[in-house]
Amino acid sequence: MSTSTPNAISTPSTISTPSTSPTITTDALIIGFGKGGKTLAAKLSAAGRKVVVAEASANMYGGTCINIGCLPSKSLILSAEQARRDGANSTPETREAAFEAAIKEKRRVTSMLRDKNYHKLADQDNITVITGRAHFTGPHSVEIATAEGPVAVTASKIFINTGATPRIPDIPGIRTTPGVYTSTGLMDLDDMPQRLVIIGSGFIGLEFASMFADFGTAVTVLQHNAEFLPREDADVAAAIRAQLEAQGVKFLFNADTKAIAPAADGGVRLSVAVKGMTRGASQACDSTPAGTGNAHTDITGATGTTDTATTTSPTGNPTDHATMSHVQTKPSDDGEPRFAEPAEARFCLTTDAVLVATGRTPNVEGLHLEAAGVELTERGAVKVDELLRTTAADIWALGDVNGGPQHTYISLDDYRVVWSQLNGSARPYTVKDRKHVPSSTFLATPYSRVGLNEREAKAAGLDYVVKRLPVAAVPKAQVMRRPDGLMKAIVERNTGRILGAMLLSVESHEVINIVKLAMDLDAPASTLRDMVFTHPTIAEALNDLFA
Image: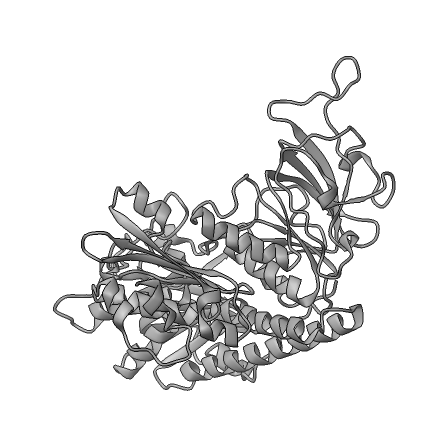
């Protein structure tokens, strides 16, 4: 698989580093060009303050969302959905053409947005954008390593906005084997993988599973434990899994990846241990030369107590999925297979590409925060209080780096928290004032939720009623030929207070915001039950859901 660097934007090289002086004194320094930081920079500039924005990469102007996160992934998801609807995922030739066009469009969108974001700040007289890696040298001083040499910056106020980076598990070969990607690399391939293994079944991994399945890739998801989406209600998780399996996505549970190495055919070979699975002994992955030895069997051919999917691949050919060679179990003294408690089977999976989707971690490496007296939490995030102040005076942290919910709109709300302190508000807005954070996962049928689910309401000891509505009962969903999914809401019994909602539905990412607004305003469920909506819309389903 070849990769390509995103198109460069039209940025004069002389702008990236000021040539007049190696030392800058400024009112504010913002480290990172993410949503919260860039919004704050524009606001400070409008207020007449001098601002320096340091960004480590010219390919990241505008932040994670527009370059390697929300927007490029949604561009590809929409292209994949179109390929599925048009039948372009049915043959190797049409799949490749659809994927090539999708990547080209994704690069166009991100390049355009990156350029606009850069000039939105750099063209302002009060803002200097410096391209280079920043690290603290003292409480109010930072050195930025640029291509032209170091630049020292002294600032009265400093804002850390460096985001998060993919978490890479400690698996032998994971960092050195070609064909192993994080979400960033997988979204910029020139060639579509015919087979894809995803390590991790969180929502990021599932978005990519759904997207690549729509393109026609045979997708296999490895999950470390036995329960699918353990934080979601069982009925919702089951519906999401059924949707993905209908797309051809296969799951292997209790799967622990032990090693990753190149395969002889240019693909990737994974050694995977599966707890609870029983099967006859054979050669282990690490004892079988790549591309030789055992005949391969489809992943769904495995049997035993582990819960494995048995659906066919999107192309109708089950061998298009990651192939799995036979298991090796530890022999007993008499030579017969012996299983530990629980039994563990060892398989060798061969695939074209691997996506590592095991979460993201705050991006603090190389910042030398200790030089400024900035402390970290036990989870490696910058430690902040409810005003997003760090443990050092006049230094704040916004966005993913502070350990809060990893959403662009939370980074924007972090800007509001910080700005409310800088603009002289009598009572600053705080993180504790933030209510009911919604989320959306863009699967073939989007899943959105806000507030408590039934599992959480029960654990909290609340007295509640559950409201349910099949999406097939919504007229607009039928008109759109998208009747799959369910809607579920949790309402406090005596007060009618909306505790939460889970919407697995077409356009759920829009409708969930209406529920959030009602919750923010403490409106009872009857408000949505009796609200007058336009027709036909998905939103009007709230009338019936809360009835």
